[in-house]
Image (cartoon, rainbow, N blue to C red; front, top):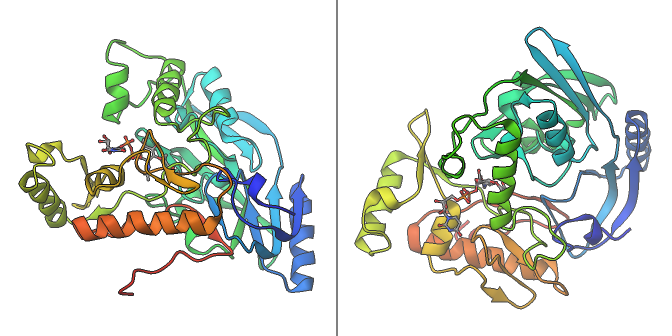
Length: 353
Ligand code: EPU
């Protein structure tokens, strides 16, 4: 089964076995079958955050297409339960249409609801860990379904136990605690600026503003967009000590990349660390938006998104990604880490590792 058409990069070789699970029971059966054959299993959602190797995957790729969304009132909250295979943006749209606050800033993100906890999807001041209450998961060892409180998911920036220990559990459904009629969170400056002329923006106005911002960065899927074959941000934003962040600002001023240190985008975190903007580092290291390396390149709208232009292969993409990583490391001494999950191919270590 070719996997390339199931990924937003449209790259990679075939899966030896492929199964679409339309119910939670199917997931259990598929896992039992793969266990009997001694085959590795990879769970695929919308394919929007995965890099598949050119040789494909010599195991079972299991795609969860279990659908359904339910709303239940619980005290002052409404609990939204979405089955893993629900397209994420339909879930957000349904919550916003009911005036339920909590996930409106996560509009326009590709992929499925069940994939959102894996990398703790976040954007424009919200992340799923903020509102996720619990998940229903299938334990891959016992093949039993159980409820997992969000507090047990080890959420961090773009990380969770599901990403750190992929062999443990499969997400079957996600439950969010949403606030009826609550005011939207406008914590991200770019979003707050976009809505500055509204005294009290509605959740649907926030959703529209987020979709607008994302479209300008080619981060909303559009079949006519030359930047469409991508996985959004290819690298995570590096989290560094305050000293390292200050050194980057000093270097940027010294090299006249900026006039004042405050112009370097930095987001201080509660624990004293600082999140830097990987896209800014990539551009200032000299990798231009729109750069082409054969069939792959850097998005013309955002330096953090790598793009396949068609007719390429995963080796091309990885060569480009390593070039970007090594260029940033050489210039700023900061090693960017990839955000997508790799299947059937490894992310190459640094030359010194
Ligand atoms: N920037 C540049 N050049 C670029 C791109 C960005 O200088 O080519 C600068 C911007 O000017 C800004 C800063 O970098 O000052 C941050 O850029 P942006 O607001 O576009 O956000 P980001 O940090 O690049 C993150 C998430 C996105 C999410 C946005 C908005 C990560 C890895 N990425 O991107 O999530 O949509 O914030 O909240 O955390 C994704 O994970 O795939 C993703 C798209």
